[in-house]
Amino acid sequence: MIVLGIESSCDETAASIVNEKKEILAQTVLSQLDEHRPYGGVVPEIAARAHLQYIDSIIDETMQKAGLSFSDLSAVAAAGGPGLIGGVMVGVMSAKAISLAQNIPFIAVNHLEGHALMPRLTSGVEFPYLLLLASGGHCQILVVEGPGKYKRLGTTIDDAAGEAYDKVAKMMGLDYPGGPEVEKKALNGDKLRFNLPRPLKGKQGCDLSFSGLKTAVRHVIEGFSPDGKIDNANMSEQDIADLCASFQYAVADSLCYKVNKAAKIFRKEFPQGKFLVVSGGVAANVFLRESLKEVAANNKLDFTAPPLKLCTDNGTMIAWAGLERFRLGHQDSLDFRPRPRWPLDADAPKSTGAGLVKA
Ligand code: KG4
Ligand code: ZN
Picture 1: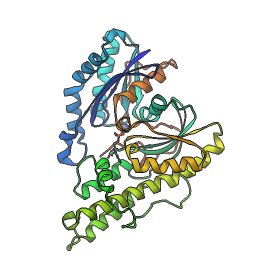
Picture 2 (picture 1 turned 180 degrees about the horizontal axis):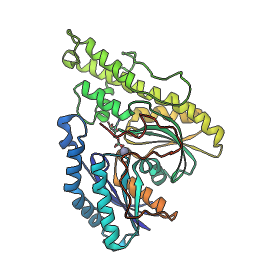
Picture 3 (picture 1 turned 60 degrees about the horizontal axis):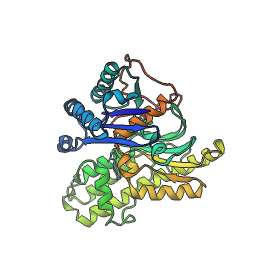
Picture 4 (picture 1 turned 30 degrees about the horizontal axis):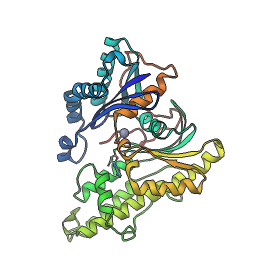
């Protein structure tokens, strides 16, 4: 079983080929960082045009690297949403064209399911497992019971964790995307220097919130400016490093507090479950990974996360989720319509923070 996966739901044009032995036969990721950098965030129209420009060559390059032709494929998968609709359409149309021309099944993969199932490829995690899915557009705590079977225990009620990283980085004049930049600066910082809030900590349930934390960071930056503007001109390198470290600590602390609560529920309701998993772009944050390891140990769970490079958007997660669905007999018709919103747990109450795409 060999599956080609295509990802184009945000600002990465990516393709990958995996097989059922969990081998990645080839993968290619093209990040549109240069296109979006001047704007400090992803611009949907620019993203869609760039996907259109590069998708064919990215797919070709991936097929060549694997030494395969289209007729070797068992199925073709594409991220069908949630995400920026122009980009999703580009990936879905490409996959449908290959499906039609080669007469092989097409599988529309939920981008979030791609992140959610990635650790099954990289560390062989068995269902059910507890998952923190933290990316630029989403932040949820879920029980993963199988492909298409999710129980949401908590979600952000406003910003996603990655979105908060990106916005805070922008306020401090750091490069885009903000997560890796803040993490780099934080290495030289004092995480205890600024006492930032942990929104919703101590409140019932496993929901999360980051917008108050973002505002608190803005107030700290304004405090350095004599006229109270959001201006980092009066902040030294050390001030920025300390603020990055304090922010990173506050995000990890907030996430760990709620994941710890979710772990208690998981242990009770799914006693056969053994793993706490983190995935999505923010899972590349080493400080967060280390903090979550402690939460897992305290709850007698094993901890795992995809390798750093497979945390952010890539084609492998789409190919693998497609393969997991395909071997269960699932495929989609060529009438599939790209879905800007596509919750993993359709039964969970709607939340303004869940299922949002990056601004
Ligand atoms: O999963 P992803 O590539 O795209 C979405 O599906 O949203 O996640 C991208 C997000 C960005 O907000 C980025 O700043 C964040 O993940 N991110 C990080 C790190 N690397 C990427 N956040 C914190 N620390 C990192 N090392
Ligand atoms: Zn993603």
